[in-house]
Image (cartoon, rainbow, N blue to C red; front, top):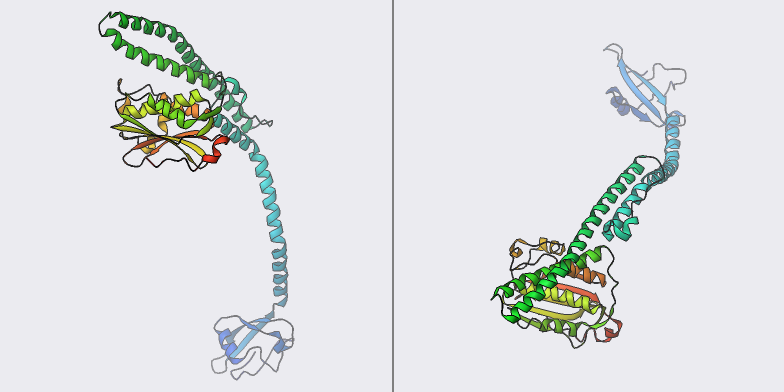
Length: 394
């Protein structure tokens, strides 16, 4: 307790009766309600003190009462706790993260197996036939994930059975139609040669040939889906020579078909399958071209590229992948005379994929509007002529 002149007029047993706890400036702050921290060395003790003060007494002789408590032990405890947490908390956090990772990984492992199985089935695109054994793995635990896997496998079984029935129907129907169509075609040819029926045999021959081609396409796709088709027999084929040979068959087409190819471009592929794929692409280009079709063969990035460009109306970017689906025809190709059955591009993709290549539709440089691009692996014997045989850009 000090008076207005900062003289000690009283204190506890442990207080210094000669030196006040606070200096005048510190006392003024303390009287405003603030807690003042005082170094204990000033009072001969270890550790700091926390001091508060209030004013008391009459207005004529006011006194200031100060109370101080050492809190060095609190600081020491806080420092020790902080150091302990800095060391143990990262270790504890790492251990908890590891435990959580192991537990969550163990819990989600069956889900990942289901995802991988579904991805495999989606990649093969087969849920029936020889690949029917590819089903989602069923976890051993009797929980909801096992029930989900069993339900999904049952659904895949039903879908596979339906797909198998549909494929069998298509194959059987196409097979049964071959003989009658062949007989009708033979009779129409005989009638044409004998001059019977006027122009009717010639008119009917167009539809019969179209139906025969559709039947052959359906049989090819049905066999490919059922994996009953004989394996491909890749052999070294001169793609430039084959493309030129196929293009010659369109010398009487309604638009001109030009070819730009090197003297030699060897690839490994089944020649008949490549010939059919190129013919389908040229058929589509001629059907929709305005004035011409350009066929080119060259080497790019260690691959043989066969491109067919036309100056027709083109295909919107969002439809360029969809047209490779079966029985897909855009609105401007639905006419009986101008459009096919929607199987030509599907067959092209099937044949080129079977040979380890790719096919896509892209925008072409003027004067062309659309380009069909086939990429197939090069044969080793043609690697020495990669860059010297590429033609100029169409």
